[in-house]
Image 1 (spheres, rainbow, N blue to C red):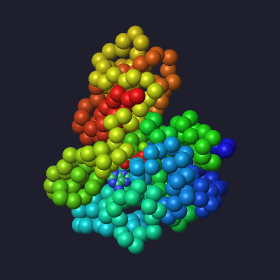
Image 2: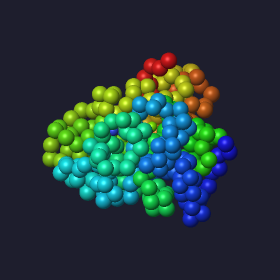
Image 3: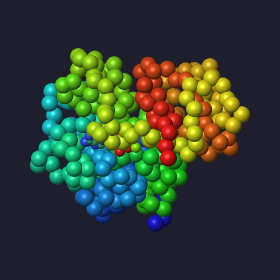
Length: 311
Ligand code: TXA
Ligand code: MG
């Protein structure tokens, strides 16, 4: 299969919508990372996503819809879920909620679970595609399973070239990290840290958010995920001879996430920096310490996974 990259616009959206209507999948940017989208009501189309990514079939996908009304036809919202959705959608928040019995979602999307991960994205390209197709779109990050998430069209091409028909290119994504995933309930639980910091969720719900997924509830949260091809050392204050150093703040590296110590800038640049480090000469990668505050928690979550041992 030849992979084409088209610049975002009416024509590209039309082409993308045609591919999706025909049961194919298309890479499309969201405000977090590029996603690999297909019609969530078509099991064949969803199987195509798993095949292109080489993703284990037990790992469920996030469904993207245009608004809260559409989300409510698919999932059951309790009052906490409504509070979060009304405050934070469209935006980088995914809610894991009970799947409605009458929802027309392919079972492969939820990998057979009775819950569904759902979000309303803010990016014009994904929103345009939702409108043009009129379908809920299942979309995991548009990278081969287990590799670094894509924040630019060329990252997608590097990982999925020849495996998908179309990449919609609308430049670098804004947040740079996958959405925050929350399972409302008692207590509400954070399944994946992301661009929306825990403080914000705690404030909106008026109570503490329980610590994360146990690896079964959010199977994508396997220890070794977002992995570059090289060993990665954390909290490095200086470069060793065989290393490519990714700096932060006062620790200047071969590349620096944010010289001014801005965590939002660092999040947006993180995956691009890992891709670049993977391509660089040195055999190993080191990363300077990044503070845990705000979105720093999500940055460190991704870095710990990138550094985790793998076979
Ligand atoms: O920002 C994002 O969320 C991006 C863009 C494309 O929207 N998508 C994304 O999808 O990161 P993906 O498939 O790479 O990550 C989805 C995560 C996985 O960790 C998966 O296990 C978890 O969501 N998940 C999906 N359905 C779930 C469910 N019913 N219960 C618990 N976790 C679920
Ligand atoms: Mg992913």
